[in-house]
Structures are given as structure tokens and as C-alpha cells.
Image 1 (cartoon, helix red, strand yellow):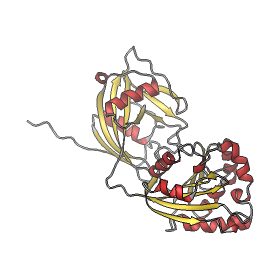
Image 2: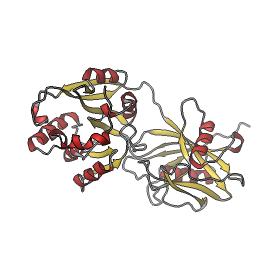
Image 3: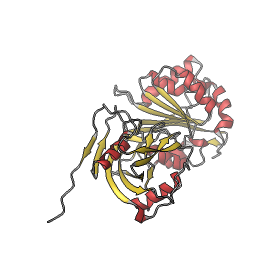
Image 4: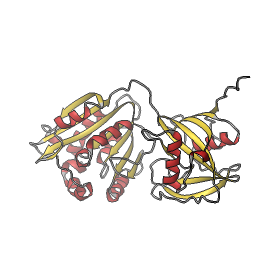
Length: 367
């Protein structure tokens, strides 16, 4: 299977009559197919369109009442898609389809058209895309094989077998109206539903409350696709084989260039949290003092636009809501917290908003 660079081929793909959907008959044919592939239960679905190009399929999904997030690695394509989708319920982001910059968001549909065959590790991309789906969500993959390039349906079906419980294979080559002309190669769509996991699983994340007297260090998120522009404590995910303390030490070194030892850390609180439209997570907050031998600096400028110290007793409002709730609980001496967003909540802390933090009482020590 040949892999090529998307940026080098974007122009030629968009000039093909089947890609830009400029022909009204072609566009109508794709719209009809999309109605059978996307959820039709009367509610707007959250659709992630990967490798969205100029936004042709994104626009069809929006016109059918869905909310679309499009991702493409080409800034020029993104600019064209934003123009095409201006005034609609669509957000278009610059990013890699393999690891789209959507943070903790989850979707009803992850859609990709003539994208998977371009990726260097299609199997890894499929695994990650499945993780971006809400329970009951679906993958919509439109691919083909032509002239030795692409992915034959049998190959993609085999790759999906360990990841899915059901796959619908829909051949598309015989429908000339989809392509604006007859075609004699293999073109198809797969609608796949990920296998149900027998047990609930959660991401475990770690957060550093680095103190300098009564001040705490906060980072302003940038370029991540989740809560960009908002303040958050230095944080990250626990990786396979790590305990939470080791993960915190690694993240502190990677994000702010601070070398901490296990003896430097104190457990501040444990929080189970859920972001709007996201999956539950369990977060461990650790506190540490920033002594004179520590000099934090921004080691990830692609994810953070800057670091600053803020008074713990007068935190800014433009913070990620669950992080602000964690710091407020820490100041109050609370150690176990639930912070559960509803889907319509804002990610940002809202001083006058509905209180989502629930402090869980701990047991008293035995007499």
C-alpha cells in the first residue's frame, strides 16, 4: 500500500470532480449517501471530519443538522473550508488527522474520506480514532484502491476486525453519480461501530500545584485543541507502566523544566472529572514548593503560550473550570472532589455559573 504526503497531493485531489462536489448531481448523490451514514435520530450529532480539505463533506453534514469539527494539516485548505462553512455550526482546525487537536472532546461520528491510506501508521490511527468516539459512536471511512495506491476493502476490514463489533461495507464504484463519471477501480464506504468494552476505563491524569509562597504557577494552553487560551496547572496523562507520582515528575520535567523528587511531592487532592462532551477522568493533584534551586520555564511552546505566577487566594477567572475547582478545594482543605460537567457547560471557569464541584467527605481516623 503506497503512502504519500497529503500536502503534495491536496491540489490534485481537490480538482477531481468527486472531491470538491461542485457538480450539483454529484453533490446530491453524496448528500443522499451521507443521510444513510450519519445518525438519523433527530438530534444533532457531533461529527469529526478528518482530512476535511476544503470542507465539502463537512458542509453536507452541517446542512443535515449536525455539528462538525473539521481538521486538515494544510493551512490553505483550512482557510478555504472556513470560508465555505462561514456562518454555520462548524469549527475548522489545522492539525494532523492521525492525532487531531481536539483534546478531551468525544464525537458521535469520526469521518475520513481518502485520508487513511495517506497515513504512515493506519492501524494506530484507527485505534486512536475509536478512542475519540462517544459510547455508541461510529467510524465512517470512505476509501478505495486505484492503480496500486489506496487501501483495498479487504485490508481495511481486517484492520477493523479487532477494534469493532460491526462493520457495514458499502461498495461505491458502481454509482457513477458519486464520481461524476464511470469508474472501474475499487471505491467503498465502511461504517464501523467499535467493540463494547466489558469494563469501564478512565484516563488518569496528574496536576502540579507548584507553590512559591502564596503564589501558584499556571500555564496558558495553546495549540492543543482543548481549552486553548485558558490557564491550567502543569499537567499530563499517566502512561502505561507508570504510577501517578512518577508521571507527575516526568510531566514537570517535560513541561516546565523542573526536576522534582518523590520526597518533594505531597498529595493535594484526588478528583474525578468530566469535561463537556468528554469521558470521565481521574486526576491526582500534587503540591510542591518552588525552592530557589528550581527555575520553571516553558519547555512546550507548541502547547503553552506562557507561564506566570498567580496568588492562590485570588486566582484569575480565565481558568479551565475543573482545574480552578481543584485549586479552590485545595485551599479549603478538601481532598476528594467530583467535578462533573454537563454537555452544555463551558470549559472555562464561570464565577456565576452552576457549581459542579462536589466535595466528598473523608472518614475520620479510627479512635
